Amino acid sequence: MYPSDYRYTKDHEWIKLDGPVGTIGITDYAQAELGDVVFVELPKAGTQVKAGQSFGTVESVKAVSEIFSPVSGEVVETNAALADSPEKINQDPHGAAWLVKVRLADPKEISGLMDAAAYQAYIAEKAKEHSA
Amino acid sequence: MLGSLVRCKLEKFSVTTPATAELRKTALNSIHRRLGARMVNFGGWDMPVEYSGIMAEHMAVRTRAGLFDVSHMGELEIRGPDALELVQHVTCNNAAKLVIGQAQYSGLMTSRGTFVDDLLVHKISETHYLLCVNAANQEGDFEHVVANNRFDATVENTGPRYSQLAIQGPRAKEILQRVTQITLDPIRYYHFAFGRVDGVECLVARTGYTGEDGFEIYFDPEFSEKLWNSIMEAGEQEGLIPCGLGARNTLRLEAGMCLYGHEIDDTTTPWEAGLGWICKLDKGQFLGSDVLARQKQSGLERKLMGFEMLDKRIGRDGYPVLIGGREAGCVTSGCPSPYLKKNIGMAYVPPAAAAIGTEIGIGIRGQSAPARIIALPFYKRPQ
Image 1 (cartoon, chains in turn orange, purple):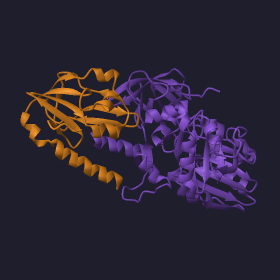
Image 2 (cartoon, chains in turn yellow, blue):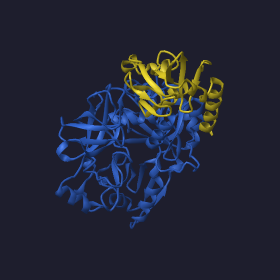
Image 3 (tube, one colour):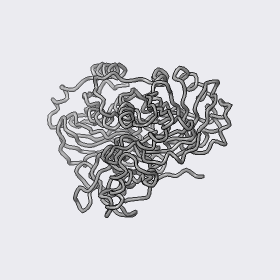
Image 4 (spheres, chains in turn cyan, orange):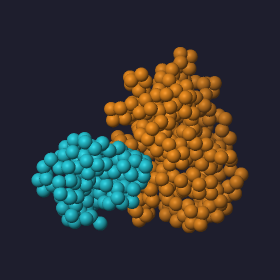
């Protein structure tokens, strides 16, 4: 479910590194919590983003959710297909529904993020709180 | 990202309940969990917000049928020789117009002519009225009615004695008919009957909060799972599905219905909320009637109107209404409309901006998004 070559944040974003560029999306857990996604607002290419800061929003029928960047750097591409089919985020959150690609300012930032095992343990803990 | 999501959800679905308080559960709680519903704190109750998804549930109600557990709703019962006088004193609609077996949408009023709650008043007999009130308000409503009871009448908070199921949608009647000996067809809109559903004594009212035909069924909580299961089974072939509070909210918003804590509260009057049709000054004095009479004379400073967004953005609860770049009002509810496929909402605006067709701005994340005032309701079911 959670690819082992991705890294994850506590805010439920993922990042996959490919050389100096990281592809960023939201996790399956996040899309399930949100429900039917209906609108996505993303930064334009060239925008500078900072680790831990909001760079866009994903909206479902019931809620608005900010997306926080896992890393600092410059947006080099946004997923234009999401403007017309935001529901892809529910269907393929770890694949086709990536949000942005960012050229990392400092690749070392990645080491502060969770790996798949740590993230799965983290959301298992969340789920326990939820059902308590 | 879910940090902000959870905040949103809580604002939207919970009403002033401390996080530490024990959540109340309906008799169907374990069924909801078994069905995999996403649960939220709604006014202190642990309630299903969605099962298969708000979109799918919403569309099921518009095109087929949906079943809602609304057992969190409160019930107050007023009995006695002066039961009608007490109801008339605390509510703004004219309960004297009701015949036995009829229900009425009304407002429970403060002495300032604002809403303590909105409610359904059912006339069970000349000396017995059943009031269906909002879950989060039921204790406050009870205390308010008791405090204003200077009549020969008794008031009881009977919420714990009832479960309530709502079956809503164009196929609701034929589905429910399979499991009840009550003949449903002659029950007119906003009327009710007593009888058995799958052998269980029920009050079956042709009322709802979705803009569709449908029924709200009140009965002893002991039989909750039995009734839920038998109705679900009866509707299986019609595509009846369980629906949560998420779809209930989008359905009522499309239908232009008010939600307490959003469109109405103890600072808003029926005139402002577009609920003049439930405010009957000619019935005689009642709580707040003098204030309401004066406001009718002097005119309004704000009016509740419907709007549609003119781009893809969504104007949501709490977002400011901008006119000429200045904050001039507030969105009370807003969402993407699953049926109409556009983004709609209700907002308080100054009378000068309330004409149908007026273009307004909605403040969304620091920008003004264009919107237009349109007529309510957004959706009216085909007759």
